[in-house]
Image 1 (cartoon, one colour):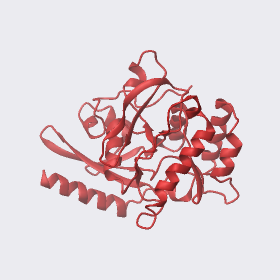
Image 2 (cartoon, one colour):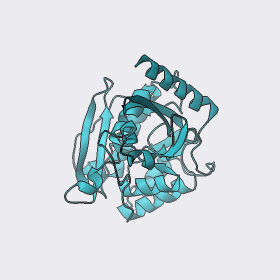
Image 3 (tube, helix red, strand yellow):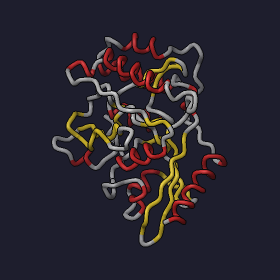
Image 4 (cartoon, helix red, strand yellow):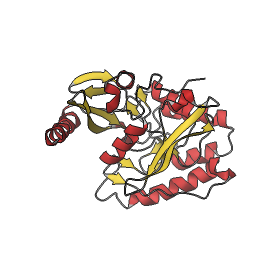
Length: 278
């Protein structure tokens, strides 16, 4: 076991410094709108129009500059009596629009999250990956729930929660500047077998929102339709390319493998590791 932990730490060091991973997205134009301006623009948009707007903003590169350098996450699993090691790369916080100093952590439907992931050569995480990312995070933010109600799916409540999260994030800036790996501030929209096995079909699957002790508030849940997003939802992008004992694979190859799935899944094989694009 000690040998496995040491090998994992060595892999993190190697891949963090020798293979710097950069999100495949255009440079941000300084003239692009900041988070506050985007909130104002989308405040009264219907869902379809709002999600088209978000997709266009991400596609042209209007996300904070610090998101471009991805963070390494490493883990290992005992498979057929031998430890296998994996390293993959994630954006440092949940997907946001705007500038470094004024950004909007932007909830969205899983369909839009998948569409953005596809465009940027990324995937969404599994439940196990959410746990791995939380363990690797240097900034662990205490969840900030808002009392449930019909307004929790509206932009004004999204904006209130965005401000709450930023107030918490500021407390870590002196030791953990922007670009440090953050977790705990949102629930994750996740890849799961429940995407295709839930009844009725067409569901968003969420998980996470770990408190500072590591306990997740949100269990794996598929109770909402796939056009649903509330203030607590976040999109974490993971680069498709991963490294297993030095070999380059794709996340989908690992999740669909009868053996290697243990590295990234606690649900067994995930044969369709994506949301259907409508």
